[in-house]
Image 1 (cartoon, helix red, strand yellow):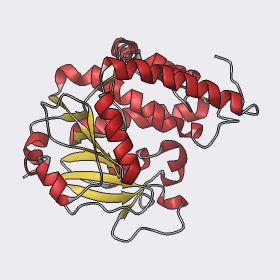
Image 2 (cartoon, one colour):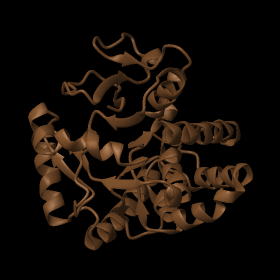
Image 3 (cartoon, one colour):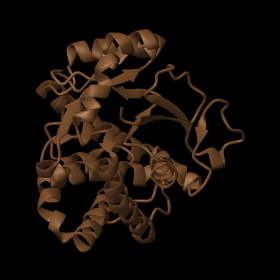
Image 4 (tube, one colour):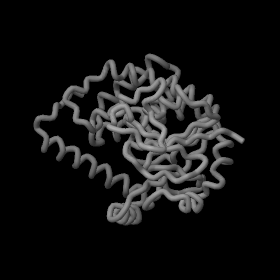
Length: 297
């Protein structure tokens, strides 16, 4: 039986269902006032826990890479899991909270077999009906020049990945959330590629004047780099894509379920409306924050 460890990344105390595949881990533990009881913590051993405000859930990924032995490594968020439905039509569904009963209904009893059949499991790609590069540049709290810097670093460090990177960033399907499950050898290769790129990005990026949300750039960049890596390795790996579950409670859950019924995730009409809404919201944000630094393209 394979040793599968799926880390559920939490920056606040959250209930994680008791399941043999799921392990709750507190991210940014070095910056917190206290350790969450019953959780692993990303500030032990070799770690970058103190970088959590920019690296987000990646501090757990780095910690697992440096400190944990397993056959498969996975990473979920406290509000976003994957579930094993390879035939799903939509990239995600919305539910109220993670429970053992819900996971059973969503096929977690078969999840281990699916994992062992694959080298890499990704969230189902979401069609945004706009190129990845353009989507990044227009999204709130993102800066086009940050992605350009990351592209330049990838090209200089691994020129053999340039074509795959261009193909992914020019395409319209994206993988969101830094959520994935990888066989040990793939995970180690991915981390050995990703984290030096992010380190070089940190050395070259100018984030002066960034808001706290904008300073999460390393996490944002890594979401796109996961797609680049997958595009480059897809031909020599067994890869599956499965949908996400997004967890919301109360009125927020109802609102999102209504929205998804009217504008299904991955549909053309949702993509077009979201593109208009995101662009408009970003313009309003800039207009309402005159002190925010405007950078050259």
